[in-house]
Length: 162
Image (cartoon, rainbow, N blue to C red; front, side, top):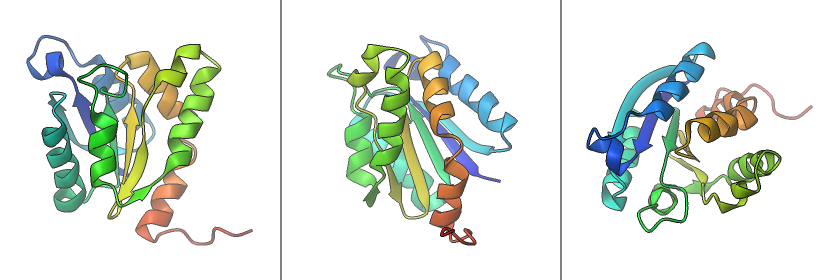
Protein backbone atom coordinates (compact mmCIF):
# COMPACT_ATOMS: atom_id res chain seq x y z
CA UNK A 1 0.00 0.00 0.00
CA UNK A 2 1.29 3.45 -0.91
CA UNK A 3 1.34 5.85 2.04
CA UNK A 4 0.18 9.25 0.86
CA UNK A 5 -0.20 12.86 1.95
CA UNK A 6 -2.54 15.38 0.36
CA UNK A 7 -1.43 18.96 0.79
CA UNK A 8 -3.88 21.58 -0.43
CA UNK A 9 -2.33 24.98 -1.10
CA UNK A 10 -5.04 27.63 -0.89
CA UNK A 11 -5.23 31.00 0.84
CA UNK A 12 -9.04 30.88 0.95
CA UNK A 13 -9.15 27.20 1.91
CA UNK A 14 -6.71 27.72 4.77
CA UNK A 15 -8.98 30.46 6.16
CA UNK A 16 -12.11 28.32 5.85
CA UNK A 17 -13.49 30.58 3.11
CA UNK A 18 -13.57 27.79 0.50
CA UNK A 19 -14.37 24.09 0.82
CA UNK A 20 -11.51 21.84 -0.29
CA UNK A 21 -13.30 19.82 -2.94
CA UNK A 22 -10.04 18.98 -4.72
CA UNK A 23 -8.48 17.41 -1.63
CA UNK A 24 -11.67 15.47 -0.90
CA UNK A 25 -11.89 14.16 -4.47
CA UNK A 26 -8.22 13.15 -4.47
CA UNK A 27 -8.68 11.30 -1.17
CA UNK A 28 -11.66 9.38 -2.54
CA UNK A 29 -9.78 8.45 -5.72
CA UNK A 30 -6.66 7.36 -3.85
CA UNK A 31 -8.61 5.24 -1.38
CA UNK A 32 -10.45 3.56 -4.27
CA UNK A 33 -7.01 2.60 -5.63
CA UNK A 34 -5.89 1.19 -2.25
CA UNK A 35 -3.58 4.08 -1.39
CA UNK A 36 -3.37 4.89 2.30
CA UNK A 37 -4.06 8.62 2.86
CA UNK A 38 -2.22 9.21 6.13
CA UNK A 39 -1.87 12.99 6.15
CA UNK A 40 -4.05 15.83 4.91
CA UNK A 41 -3.67 19.54 5.47
CA UNK A 42 -4.71 22.85 3.93
CA UNK A 43 -2.14 25.63 4.06
CA UNK A 44 -1.87 29.11 2.52
CA UNK A 45 0.19 30.02 -0.54
CA UNK A 46 3.26 30.84 1.55
CA UNK A 47 6.52 29.44 0.21
CA UNK A 48 8.15 28.89 3.61
CA UNK A 49 5.09 27.11 4.99
CA UNK A 50 4.85 24.88 1.92
CA UNK A 51 8.55 24.00 2.24
CA UNK A 52 8.18 23.20 5.96
CA UNK A 53 5.23 20.88 5.29
CA UNK A 54 6.96 19.07 2.42
CA UNK A 55 10.10 18.54 4.51
CA UNK A 56 8.06 17.36 7.51
CA UNK A 57 6.12 14.83 5.43
CA UNK A 58 9.26 13.51 3.71
CA UNK A 59 11.74 13.56 6.59
CA UNK A 60 9.56 12.91 9.63
CA UNK A 61 6.46 11.06 8.43
CA UNK A 62 8.42 9.26 5.68
CA UNK A 63 5.37 8.80 3.46
CA UNK A 64 5.79 7.41 -0.07
CA UNK A 65 3.86 10.07 -1.97
CA UNK A 66 2.81 13.69 -1.55
CA UNK A 67 0.17 15.13 -3.85
CA UNK A 68 -0.01 18.89 -3.61
CA UNK A 69 -2.89 20.70 -5.24
CA UNK A 70 -3.08 24.39 -5.96
CA UNK A 71 -0.53 27.13 -6.49
CA UNK A 72 0.78 25.97 -9.88
CA UNK A 73 -0.48 28.80 -12.09
CA UNK A 74 0.63 32.29 -13.04
CA UNK A 75 -0.71 34.24 -10.06
CA UNK A 76 1.80 36.11 -7.90
CA UNK A 77 0.67 33.90 -4.99
CA UNK A 78 1.28 30.64 -6.92
CA UNK A 79 4.55 29.39 -5.42
CA UNK A 80 4.05 25.64 -5.03
CA UNK A 81 6.53 24.70 -7.81
CA UNK A 82 9.21 26.97 -6.34
CA UNK A 83 8.71 25.48 -2.87
CA UNK A 84 8.84 21.96 -4.29
CA UNK A 85 11.97 22.64 -6.34
CA UNK A 86 13.73 24.03 -3.27
CA UNK A 87 13.21 20.83 -1.22
CA UNK A 88 13.59 18.01 -3.75
CA UNK A 89 16.87 16.17 -4.25
CA UNK A 90 16.01 14.76 -7.68
CA UNK A 91 13.76 16.15 -10.38
CA UNK A 92 11.21 13.81 -12.03
CA UNK A 93 10.30 15.89 -15.10
CA UNK A 94 8.57 13.09 -17.01
CA UNK A 95 5.67 13.13 -14.57
CA UNK A 96 4.86 16.81 -15.06
CA UNK A 97 5.49 16.48 -18.80
CA UNK A 98 3.03 13.58 -19.03
CA UNK A 99 0.39 15.50 -17.09
CA UNK A 100 0.71 18.55 -19.34
CA UNK A 101 0.78 16.41 -22.49
CA UNK A 102 -2.41 14.60 -21.55
CA UNK A 103 -4.10 17.76 -20.31
CA UNK A 104 -3.35 19.52 -23.60
CA UNK A 105 -5.66 16.98 -25.25
CA UNK A 106 -8.45 18.43 -23.09
CA UNK A 107 -7.63 22.16 -22.95
CA UNK A 108 -4.97 24.46 -24.43
CA UNK A 109 -4.78 26.12 -20.98
CA UNK A 110 -2.80 23.09 -19.78
CA UNK A 111 0.35 24.71 -21.15
CA UNK A 112 0.00 27.32 -18.40
CA UNK A 113 0.65 24.75 -15.67
CA UNK A 114 3.97 25.18 -13.89
CA UNK A 115 3.59 21.92 -11.93
CA UNK A 116 6.72 19.94 -11.09
CA UNK A 117 7.48 16.53 -9.62
CA UNK A 118 10.52 15.31 -7.75
CA UNK A 119 11.99 13.13 -5.05
CA UNK A 120 13.15 13.95 -1.54
CA UNK A 121 14.64 10.98 0.31
CA UNK A 122 12.14 8.12 -0.32
CA UNK A 123 9.16 10.38 -1.08
CA UNK A 124 7.78 11.33 -4.48
CA UNK A 125 6.22 14.81 -4.58
CA UNK A 126 3.80 15.69 -7.38
CA UNK A 127 2.18 19.10 -7.91
CA UNK A 128 -1.40 18.94 -9.19
CA UNK A 129 -3.69 21.81 -10.19
CA UNK A 130 -6.10 23.30 -7.67
CA UNK A 131 -9.12 22.64 -9.88
CA UNK A 132 -10.97 19.47 -8.81
CA UNK A 133 -11.44 18.39 -12.44
CA UNK A 134 -7.86 19.23 -13.39
CA UNK A 135 -6.32 17.50 -10.37
CA UNK A 136 -8.21 14.26 -10.97
CA UNK A 137 -7.52 14.29 -14.72
CA UNK A 138 -3.83 14.94 -14.12
CA UNK A 139 -3.48 12.20 -11.54
CA UNK A 140 -5.37 9.70 -13.67
CA UNK A 141 -2.98 10.42 -16.55
CA UNK A 142 0.01 9.24 -14.48
CA UNK A 143 -1.50 6.83 -11.97
CA UNK A 144 -0.52 3.64 -13.78
CA UNK A 145 3.19 4.46 -13.47
CA UNK A 146 3.19 5.70 -9.87
CA UNK A 147 3.20 2.30 -8.06
CA UNK A 148 6.23 1.14 -10.06
CA UNK A 149 8.01 4.43 -9.43
CA UNK A 150 7.36 4.09 -5.69
CA UNK A 151 8.59 0.48 -5.76
CA UNK A 152 11.84 1.60 -7.40
CA UNK A 153 12.21 4.52 -4.98
CA UNK A 154 11.70 2.35 -1.91
CA UNK A 155 13.84 -0.54 -3.18
CA UNK A 156 10.89 -2.89 -3.60
CA UNK A 157 11.06 -3.25 -7.38
CA UNK A 158 11.96 -6.80 -8.37
CA UNK A 159 13.23 -6.37 -11.90
CA UNK A 160 12.87 -3.33 -14.17
CA UNK A 161 14.60 -4.75 -17.26
CA UNK A 162 12.77 -7.13 -19.55
